Image (cartoon, rainbow, N blue to C red; front, side, top):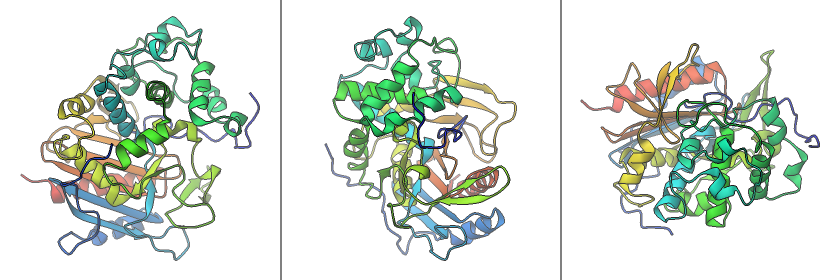
Length: 403
C-alpha cells in the first residue's frame, strides 16, 4: 500500500493494554453544575500541579445523580485559555464499552448473535478468510479473546495509508479485514487474552454489515442521542481552526511536549473508531458511567439489564502482567469493553478502563454494587498522566463510596 502522509512511525491509538430511536431520559443525571454538587477543584488542582498536567477534569455520578464535577487548568500547555465543564476531552479506548453496547443492541434486535462469526457476517465481503479467523465470534472479538492481531508495525501500515483519502470508513474497515484475512488467530479463540484494536475494527465492520449504516452513525443515533450526550463526537476534540477544547499533547522521547491542535495529527485514523475515537465533556462521560453503574435499570433503555449484565460479566482472564503500567491492575479479567479488577482502595471488584490516543488520557471506574460511576480526564499522556488519574480515582472513590 502507498505510504500515508501521516507519519508512519506514529503508533496506532490505544497501543497495548489501555484498559484497562431516542427514548425519554426521565432519570438521567443532571448535566450542569448546581449548588448541590461538590466542587472538586481543591482535589484536582493540587494533583494537576504535582503531575504537571495542562488540564484535569473529573466527575462522579451516584444513584443516577451527578454529585460532583470540576475541570481545572488550561486547554493548551503554556496558554491562559481555561478549561470548562463543557469542554470535550478524548476518551480513547473507553469507546470500546460503547461499541460493545451497540453490539448488544444488534443482538437484541436479532441482527447478530454473540456467537456470530466473522465468516458468517463478513465472508461474502472478505472471501478467503483463514478458516480459524473466520470462526472467531463477535463475543470473542469484544473480549479480546479472539486472537485478532495486536498493534504492530505491520498493522500501522494498515491503519496509516493513502486509502484514508479514497474510501468511506465502512469500506476502509473491510479493507483492513482483507489485509489480515490470511492470518490465523495468534492464540486459541476464547482461551487467552490479547488486547486488540483490530478486533474492535472487525466488530465494527460486522455491525456495519448487519445494520446497513456506518458505526459513526450508529453510535451517534443509538447511544449519544438517547443519553443526551450533547457534547459527544468522534475524532479530535477540537474544531479545526479553533482551540475550543483541551488540546492533546504529544510527548517525544527527549521529553519535548508538542500540542496537537486539530485535524489529522490530533487523533488516530478514523477507521479505528470502534476501538477508540470518541470525545465528550467530563459531565457527559460521567452520565455514561452512571448509566452503566445503574446496570441499565434507568432510562434510556439502550439494552435490557440482562444484556448489559452479559456485557459487564467477565469473559476471559487477563493473566498476570509482569510490568503493569500505572493504574493498570497486575491481574484481572476482561468483560466486553470493560476490565474487571480489584483495586487496593476499593471494597470489591470494579469495572474500569483506561483510554489514550497517546496525546490524551481518560479513566472510567464503575462500582455497580454502589451504583457509583466516576471518571477522570486529562489532555496529556504518559506516566505522569496515568499516575494523576489513578490518584484522582482513588481519592474520589474513597470520598463518594458509601459503607
